[in-house]
Image (cartoon, rainbow, N blue to C red; front, side, top):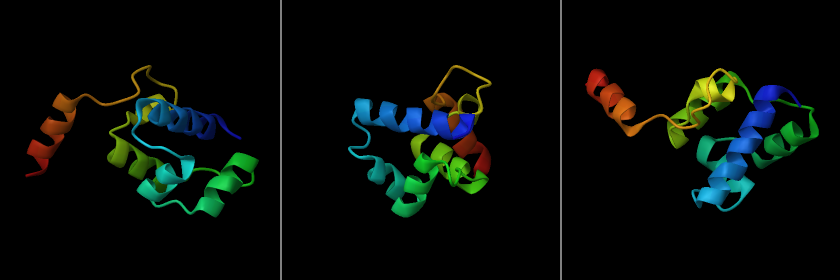
Length: 89
């Protein structure tokens, strides 16, 4: 399993501890990943793809730089999210 995959599984555990999701498969359903794909990623025969990472960041407001090990902050601030929404209008 590569570093990015490990970070995303760390995120899943964090989301469970925060009560955001109950099971790993809730996470998979939320971001459009098949349960079989999640199992393959855990086994190391597949990896999270760019589309998965983008969707994870959108759905859970995750800082993509954290996933790639560039920053320590896991989540984007609400202020950043609101600014983004304002800019898109």
